[in-house]
Length: 126
Image (cartoon, rainbow, N blue to C red; front, side, top):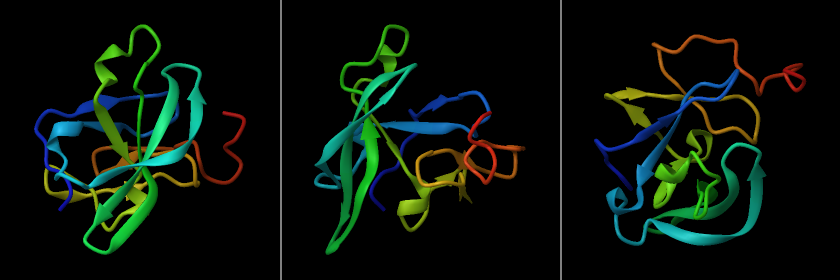
């Protein structure tokens, strides 16, 4: 386990399942290692990435954060989201989540979340 939290932020975007952001302090020490590269979200701003590290295993760029988010998303400072498809498992209330399709989006799908969702074939223009 690299993190456990009861203080997550659940972010919803159009045509996406929720993405959960966990406080940095809720990650095990050393589980997040800064990684190279950035992406830009028109809503939240510039994202920075982190590798998720457990013992001798590294999930490259499996977490991201917004150090200086755009106005309205200030609550995301010092929080990290994790790409469920790049790690062994992510859970919500004990349920293992299904990763959102596609290699870019980080949505967490549970039995309580119903699609269709952006990320799969033919969904680019949604």
